[in-house]
View 1: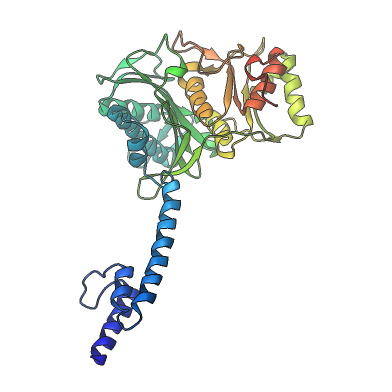
View 2 (view 1 turned 90 degrees about the vertical axis):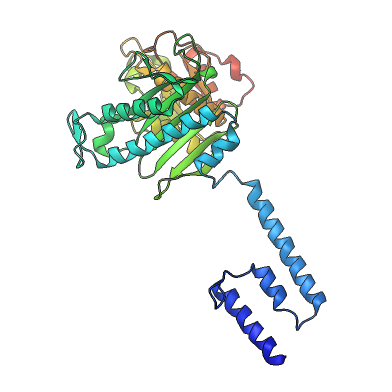
Length: 383
């Protein structure tokens, strides 16, 4: 009997160390092994140890459950975030296109207006290549009725049903050759209209950020927060961050600084940022400059006009989708010189241009006060 007990103890030790029994059969859970190997000791002591272990395990599981969404795949997140299977399919199709674009941006050899890679892809400018990939992804999703882009501003009927999508295929394509971060922006509207709508009617919005890391950042109208998914080596998107609050902090990204020459209000605002020793973080790419506000949870991005510098940013393809992302992250926007959210300006034309500010509520209040004299929406917010 004693020899048998010793043999059982040795086997249990090997199982605990290697995770497999000598016969190759999968080991029982560690708790079961300890229980089986404890026959020679007090059952009371064993029960106490198991009870303590169970309590610790339950506590760890509870802690993990509290952050269950972080670490999920994109598919797992979407199953929880929306009951609409068509919206889930469309967002997955966009993620596939963005993953492919990330590879094309990394591997294309760009010169002037054309890019070609080692696979003999059609010779296209890199933004046109991205445009083509996105249209194909939306068509084969089966969930997109109309789609248009900065490259093809008139909507195309893609034959699906459920949603319509507008996108900027590669914002910042002119800085690809400098190896700065660039990105894709898109907005998703229910139904089959891309005019006579506002950004607030979006079902979802997102952007792909192509830099040292590839990130898919999305917001859904009916789900809280703004969510970041990091592309893994195995091709999966891993949920790495949820942002619900954008606080105050001295970081600014000033677009269209040429406007300061004949827009005195903008000149004074920029002088304020410099005088207050704000940190300048500006790449010339709208995607990374706005995305950093979400990542850092602070800061402000501005792009305004003047008599000599006209608006370049498109409401449908860029401004409204980014407004949804920023505002779902807990920030604010000010659009079109009207002291209103970028989500509340009506899209009357596909190529409609505007000016914009994104940032914390305090920074957007400051922007409106400097540019337009007051900020009724944020009168109670401390800037």
